[in-house]
Length: 291
Ligand SMILES: NC(=O)c1ccc[n+]([C@@H]2O[C@H](COP(=O)([O-])OP(=O)(O)OC[C@H]3O[C@@H](n4cnc5c(N)ncnc54)[C@H](OP(=O)(O)O)[C@@H]3O)[C@@H](O)[C@H]2O)c1
Image (cartoon, rainbow, N blue to C red; front, top):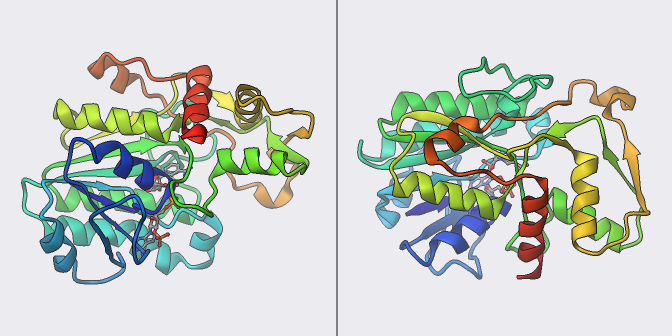
């Protein structure tokens, strides 16, 4: 199994999760990773993917790498397209037709006011990041005959020191005595990286959703404010420094998504797995923070 983006929040969790059952080959932009025994530094903007594929000989690729910083994507659309879209074109052409490619995509492929988007809903991203990921989906479906597009929203804990996702930012800021605002008018359906890894495992074990798109997120919709409060309470950290914020009061954020929620009921129906809600997700994050 080849995992791209192995230095990232999700990629790191996937490497740890799958290393007990698979021979995991990990790749990222780093020279090495403390938690990956087989690791190759490889820039996905490179034209020739043969060195990566020859080295890892994958039967399965989980493509988690992406340029995820929305501002960086806005400022450098070419870089976003190279990393998030053309990597799928090159990867698809570099492997044989049997190689299974699971592509981690995003809620950001939908417009920012689309409540509980379903797999078949019309994608029309309003950001360079979202559009580049949407194009990644397009290239994968064009170039691969054995793929699954997994659209998700994730929260988690980085394996690599010094990196910080949304949940870590909330916890670290509050622990450092800073006052933070969390949007109560932004809705999402995040799943913990660990729970997503379990879902990916089910998809692989049961060979599900071949050449399909699938949504894997929380089973309920909640606000970023509700998430932050529930997380801090679960971790036993005071919430008195957390303010209710509104994205609608930020003029320059008018284009940012207010409703990023995904409907993951198709995944639940086919797998017979109930996806986690807010309570289960913050419990899982507590475990992940303490590992
Ligand atoms: N985080 C979210 O809220 C969220 C929501 C929905 C979907 N997703 C999707 O989930 C996936 C994982 O997200 P994440 O938050 O774990 O990402 P992340 O922490 O930002 O990590 C991104 C990874 O991509 C690698 N990468 C970026 N550019 C690269 C390049 N040119 N060549 C090689 N590797 C490159 C990075 O490597 P280096 O840093 O070592 O260079 C890093 O390992 C992404 O596909 C993202 O689109 C994320």
